[in-house]
Amino acid sequence: MTSAPEKLRALLAEPGLITMPCCFDPLSAKLIEQAGFPLSFMSGFATAAARLGMPDTGLMSYAEVLDQGRNICNAVSIPVIGDGDTGYGNAINVKRTVQGFAQAGFAAVMIEDQVAPKRCGHVAGKSVVDRDEAFARIRAAADARAEGADILILARTDARHEHGLDEAIARAARFAELGADILFVEAPRDAAEMARVPAELPKPCMANIVEGGLTPALPPSEMEAMGYKIAAYPLTLMAAAMKAMADTLEAFKTGTPDEATLMGFAELKHRIGFDAYFQDEARYAAKA
Image (cartoon, rainbow, N blue to C red; front, side):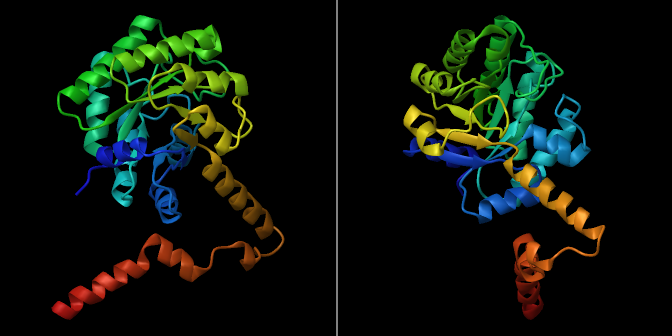
């Protein structure tokens, strides 16, 4: 059986851009897989909202993230990248975080250079640690992998916000030297800045598209032409689901929702897994 990290390595070796809708629970991950996408990412923003009903400001603990991630990875066969935030402490904590994410079944773990408690890269108030601490985090992550954690490392920098794009690219380049497999410069401000990232960095690069956020939502074809390998959409599914639920709740105030706006019961049961469950149930009953 091919492991999740092996599947991700194979995807990274293929030509073209990977469009990556992000999940926040096992059901959203299953829908992504059912739609034919080969890769997902457990969005920290969306997971904090779905699990806690709270903002992505470092409120979700390591144990809560790991529990949610384990359930997501168990629900799908496609590789999933996990959001390891700042690693939940010093470099030793980073090493433990990487080991835990590998054990949970993630294909890769993202480690970033924000000051803890971190926050969404597209909201106000974020800041980053100094270079030495940022590099120590990625060095510890690489050590965890060298010591047996079968997982890829996605290294993220938010330095663009405070220190400019040159500093962000310099940090990402050093992350690559320290062993990162995928590089992520968060929140470039325009197409010209976006183009510089993959042009000046040696590893597969990820773009992060938050609708209404700081980075322009360029068409996938343009990001592919720039040299990006992954285009992540961390909030698109949650935003769609929240709008649909809010609209449905409004409809309840004057009657009941139009069934045409809802997924049919038969399809809903099928997508959740009832049909497969009943087939297995019948198979085992017949052998009894």
